[in-house]
Length: 80
Length: 151
Image (cartoon, rainbow over all chains, first blue to last red; front, side):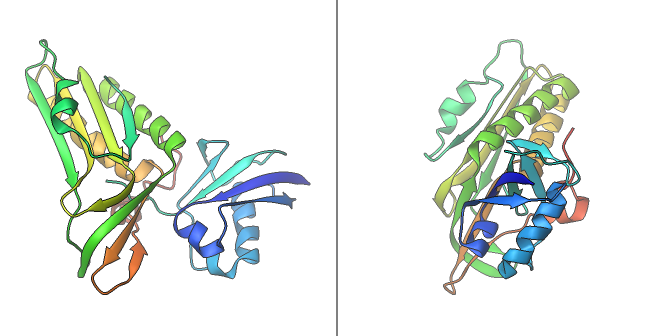
């Protein structure tokens, strides 16, 4: 069981109503963690995250999570 | 210069350009992205950029470094705005100086394209009908550019 800090941005923050949360999870990857979050927030169901970052580094969805990690879920970006 | 910056203040384009002056360069290309009054049939009144600055700066600097290595340009600089913006405001500016123009054009195009798909920046449009929406990057949907780890 890992304790992970999850952060939500832009549309995800508005959908969940929170900027961040601490979760205790057995999710082995960022993808599994996002599925868990969707289970807790119905409002996230409509979204697929475009990118994920772990500890401020762009990451792959199947990257493993470690206790204390900060996982950032980014909705589709639209700079410029 | 060779950095990427985020600012909540209006961009001074004259000061921006001066950062890229270089006597060894014969070409300068600058791209300005403006706030447009319409998108997908909707009349846009204003917009708001949310930026996760620590990673936007880091990824932006990587893009600049990649452009220098890939195209052999001498200097590159980019600034993206955050916060509320009005129509015709400059939302993003990218400048490249280089000995010759081909590399300058190509590098400038590369930088703005990568900035759009890789930096954690989100755009919320406010419409004339009173609604507001977070915009999805259409280019990302086509190329899947935002899904993979860059580089």
